[in-house]
Image (tube, rainbow over all chains, first blue to last red; front, side, top):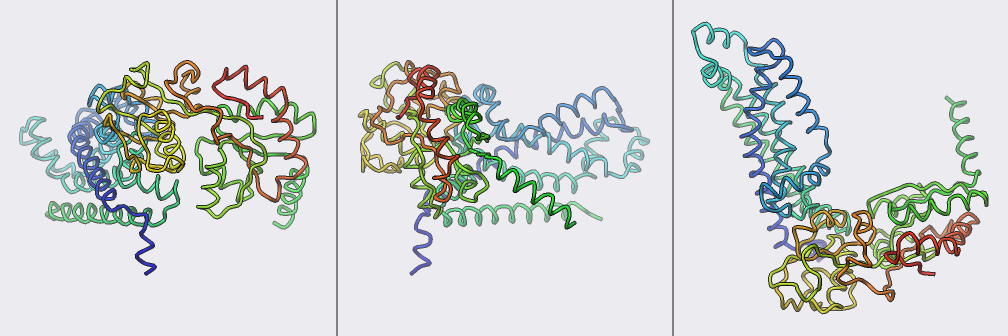
Length: 223
Length: 256
């Protein structure tokens, strides 16, 4: 049967391991990206032009750092960060070695999306909260963030899917993953069956992420 | 529009006639060797253009698609695999040099110092991964199922008495993780770029009996062209032999 022979190169055990690797890299880095990127995004927003704490100098500096990190091709970031990654996780190899660069690569991107989401919040709500005598912290946690929830969940969704494509580069540091299999066996060794299987799995992953993300956005948009 | 097309066509035809040879090469030592013969070829009327690549697929793809004239970065076993997998018929024009693959360590001075459970890093591409494993097999560190299979993978290891842990990384990254692993198998071109000295630093290194001589590769339709013959002759000159021996101090060996 030709159909059975077509998948001759596919080692399902390897595919399973690669899927686990991709999941760990994805959710591990997503967790820290949101943890670090949310405050960074809020800071960018607050210091921004015509915002509550408009500070041109601080904003310019933050913006510059964010822009520089976003300009680096991810594969360069992976390699340049090797000494730092070793400091954080003890190794630059494998899944553990891929997560710090993934976080550093995705956090500035996520922070920018958060900043945009916060800018979309109706200023009327912020002003109303301010006029009620709320402290800055209260404005942020009780008015700003809740109102920006749909935008923030959309930002998380976009970032998660971006991270999936970043994890493909992780094979360079031996972290495995589905993207790595696609490159090494699909591209370098011309094993089309492996390429198809890994791409289909990645497709399913992205579809699921997008669907879950969309449902969360709708859930939190109580309009 | 027609006039513009005519001018462009004329310009293309003109540049095709002005003996230009575009060759793809990896940076060290291939591009350097080509740059060395460039002045000699210019005197013979050939304008050699060197295009540097760091990937091992594109140089072959672009020569096969006639976008480049030749390439210089691979050895015969790799070319055979590529032709088989991609259905191309690229051919070797001339063998130039050999870059022995070596095993390096920042922690050990001798192979038998490898402790149980030590980490060994090998290139993750088909040919170099197999080549690395063959070297380790020859050095007695592991045993392979088929000692002649140049495409051996980690799954073909039948004897691993020291329970070595193998990790596969992209060949170019391996020098950068030298301090994190016990043994690293590094291609000489990357070792040279990382300022390692294959002669002094390698714990074990391939001998000159290796089938991995690096070759100048072209297509059947242009391998006999005058320009190609001039390039092949220039690459086999005593000046190039001296250049290779002096510059790479035994890390790269002339194969002619």
